[in-house]
Image (cartoon, rainbow, N blue to C red; front, side, top):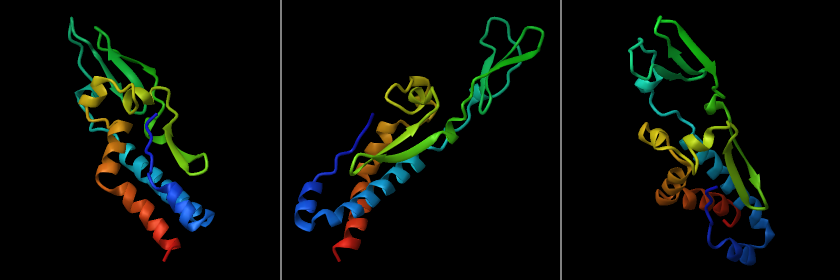
Length: 156
C-alpha cells in the first residue's frame, strides 16, 4: 500500500484545536478523489487487445477489455474465457482512521495492473501505478493545495 504523510497536522490541531480536523478530513477526501481520477483511466489499447488471425507457431491470443482472454484456433474459431472484472468500475475510496483515506480497486488482478506488483507488461503499455500517482500529486503540489484550501476555509 502506498501512503502520504502530511507533516504539520499535529501542530495545526494544537494551534486551532479539534475544530480543524473536519477541514483536514475534507482535504484528505478531496485528495483521494483526485488520486482516483488520475489512476482510473485505462491505458491506450494495443495490438494485444485486438483479434488476431491464426498463425502457426505464434501466440494467437488477445485480451478483450470487458470480456477477458480470447484466442483463435487453427480452424479459425474464436474461443475465450470470461475473466474480466471490469477494472475501471471497481475503484473505491473511503476514509481510514481519523484523518486518512484509502483508494482501492477490488478487481482481483488490480495489483498487477496498478499496484505494487505491477507487471512490466502493464507498465510498458501505459498503465499508471499507484506509486507513480502518489509521487505526481506530491510533486505537483496537489497535496499542499487541497489540504491548504480546506484549512484556509476554517482559519480565515
